[in-house]
Amino acid sequence: MTHLRTGLARLSLLALGLALAACSSSPKGDASLGDFASGVLPPPAQAYAIAVGQMQKGNYDMAVKDFNALQETYPYSTWSIHAELLGAYSQYKQMDYDDAISSLNRFIQLYPEDQEVAYAYYLKALCYYEQIDGVQRDQTSTYETIQALQDVITRFPDSAYARDARIKLRLAYNRLAGHEMAIGRYYEKQHLYAAAIGRYQDVANSYQTTTYAPEALERMVEVYLDLGLTDQAIRAASVLGYNYPGSSWYQAAYNKLKANGLVNAADESAANSDSVAPAAPKPQHHWYWPF
Image (cartoon, rainbow, N blue to C red):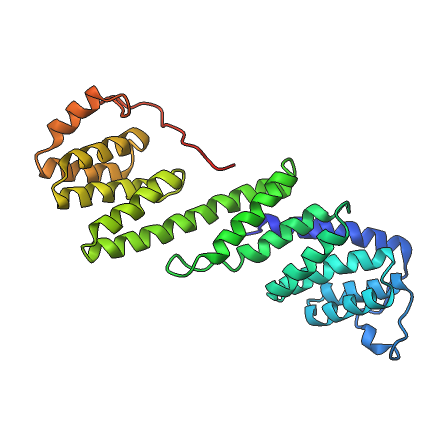
């Protein structure tokens, strides 16, 4: 599947390539700045073309070296500005994410008004996004990803980068919710019910639009029943039925209440409470989303 980030990267590189074509002659496909005598580089446009050629062939390590050489030799040229960004892109392609982030931060700091700065913010977010670990692991990368994606959305709200960032932001929040659920399930298996409920409540309250929210509510029903807290179990099931009436998790919660002889009590609660839905299905309630 072709990801949006690939198309955006190609568009960015195409724009730079068109500028290059207008300013320099095409170098040999196998050329490298290392072929030139030490300290003697060709004119900046030609040096830039050589570095881009290495990058387009997938020789990212060589491309990074060539872009760095260009910046060191011609630090005040327009080509040096582009070299900073494409050097970061080459580092990203090599999965040298820390170096890429450093390069992108430098580009953003030095050229905040450049026409490619939106892409720099987006590429920085991708560097964090690619490092997100599984739900069982520490989620530091996920929090960093969320911050970087929110920067893209806030600074460039109408851009294609922001549209893709919103999609990835939802996935990042889903990952955090999954991490909380994994911990909650562990606590529940260990009969640490108070700790489990705390995790499930956090998912239900803080990650309401993720795929884990219905499960969190159902597991709250499950734990409350294990503790003999029937009123709390009924309320959690009612909230679940209001927000996710067609969910398999709601059916599971309903079956648990029925098995404990609490279905009639749940129906009475629905009839008397303003915070839950009546028996007839209603449009799904839209909870708050951070952006």
